[in-house]
Image (cartoon, rainbow, N blue to C red; front, top):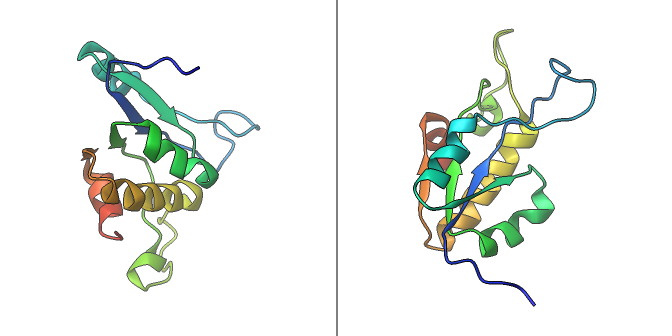
Length: 125
């Protein structure tokens, strides 16, 4: 039987670098202050992997969502454009995950906190 938690569970999107800058194996990253802030205000942070198969379950489980920032650009595809510069860095896995989870989460009428990146992702919902 599941034990009920009396604290809000706040889902946090994590970075999923699509390069081998840290390890040759796939990895997730998050600045400690996101989870620490949630804990210090009485919540339970839940780091969300970028697996689209989990989105429906995440939306059911979490009480709030934080879309974190990242060191990459939204794919110009979403603006109806192509990549025209060598300085554009995209992360399709994370971007697609965040657009989808945000869309489903907004339909749940639960609170979302988003920073500059999250505001950009929100344009597609």
